Image (tube, rainbow, N blue to C red; front, side, top):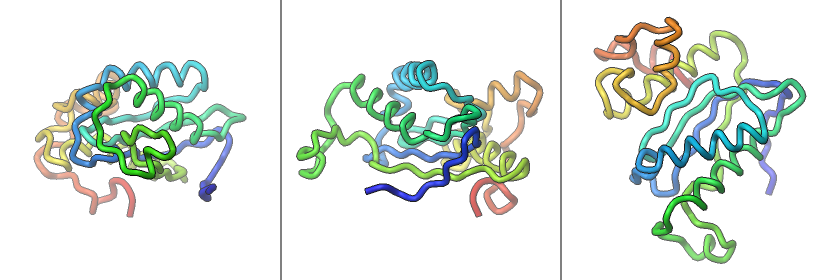
Length: 177
């Protein structure tokens, strides 16, 4: 089955990708494997990572694709497959996954949103960086080690104390509405 997705060559997209076991910690347990797989896919199928956060059971990203390319689905398929192949087996697989020869590490689909403008871009990047605080993993966004916020702080795009103290939430403009 093909899903209707917005495809814009050279577009910028926000993604949410979830593990099948939503209370798993595989992504942070094997974060170095994930990083290596993303780098490998990025080398073969270039894209720019604008923002990225890895949480225990899901991740969010904002990517910008090359000028003549709109195939983010292939990239996610390669990342998910590469990660699944490089971690030890152990997940519970339902009959449908066994029948298709799937590992069952990831949810089959992912969610994408084409970024519309600079405000939309800023809201989604902020949502990504604030997500570890939202989920209660840290009190300050910069305290989460698996986030592109560190790159943004180093570039003086955000102060080190951004995203703490409860002053930021989804109701004041971060992420989807």
